[in-house]
Length: 353
Image 1: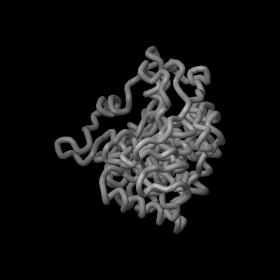
Image 2: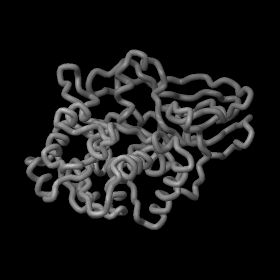
Image 3: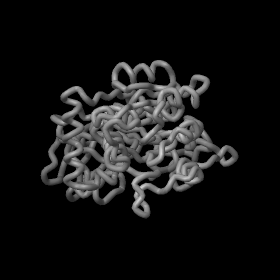
Image 4: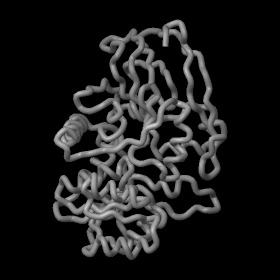
């Protein structure tokens, strides 16, 4: 992109989806980019992260016509900002667009405590900055190690086990000396968890008899359930939860596309009804709690320590990852819908440029 050619494409919500999104709910627009002013930078998006959390925000009227949010790794094309040079990689939150105008004061995830970051490729490839060494890795680390406080010998069950967060959770459980049991969709994803990631067991939720097969895989019950899905998977888990269990709730993708007529209790509602206390409330060290990766990512130097630790595990082969990559901004719509349907295999990413 030349300095004189200041146009770029972005993906916006054309109309708020009702139920599972369709391509007609999105639009790709071309816009003129203004000349840089003050301490601004012109960025070219190289990697875009697609994540389930984006879906609920698309369903509100205020989202229509706006660029869809999302974590990005961008390259500085032109800079008027001190300490930022062309070629630098910027970890930010610039959304579904090919180019953006940035400033050094920008933040990630609309969180004032998480500034944009200059990516150090010695930690890992650029894509990992919004994947296993970014939001998804921090999510797994925070939920399993800091919220649930996994202990050696415990049984950890994680849903969406071959997905972006789930694949990290299972491996962290093994690194900490726990038993890792995954729940994933289909024989290929289960084989990946077992053969590539080293899970102790993996249950195909698409096959008949999920409750019985899960019970057989956890003869000593479940000490930690890392919740990514909700729905029928959670119903199979609840009877197997041990006393003093911990349930970090990351998300519940099975609920995101339900219409008003299909609505069912969310995992926090369902767990509360099952008698579990709020983890950490009134000094409880067991129970459930919804959490976000920002609880760790916004804490310095704890975030830097976690990043260095996860990068080290990747370099020594103890932490593996798989990315589901499509090319070009126009591929983001189909890739996002496919992810919501469970068609992705690993962390869903778009190689924008």
